[in-house]
Amino acid sequence: MASSVFFAPLHYPLLSPPNRKPLSITAAVPPLSTAGDLSTVADTLDSTTIAVIGGGSVAALAAVLSLADPERRRQMQAEEVGGGDKEVVKEYFNNDGFQRWRRIYGETDDVNKVQLDIRLGHSKTVENAMKMLLDEGPLNGVTVCDAGCGTGSMSIPLAKEGAVVSASDISAAMVAEAEKLVQYL
Image (cartoon, rainbow, N blue to C red; front, side, top):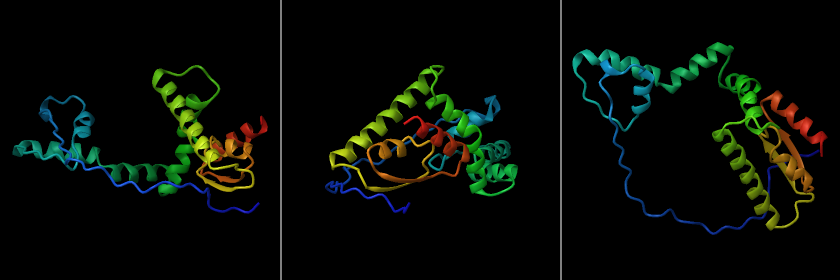
């Protein structure tokens, strides 16, 4: 089966971004001596926050900032799985990410309100995307490459409409689940 990039003749006028006022962000950082959980303080600090701190608090602030450093966290995750970014992503989506997917999108009613909202929102997004594509005409014979297909939530409806779908994902667990779901077509 030949694969190609997805093409559908969609026509949208170019939209210019609306005039917006500059974003103003204000952050209040509690005194470090009163912060029980330093990660809560780290969440309030970003590149737009300027803090004037007394000499004794500089070391504490440095510790907080190192906890909030996403690059450092990424390096630590890569070391844990013995590789780089690709291995971290693969490990996540074959394990924790897949289990989270299963809870949210699987055939279960055992979800909390947030998970239910995610499930319904994702379903609506797929429904809207399919409607938009089908409004342009039939998908029969249209070639689609779904890179990062996950469990096939978009690939399967496309295939049902006659599209020729080449789907791949970094997660073997997600692809295996997609293959199971295709069996029930």
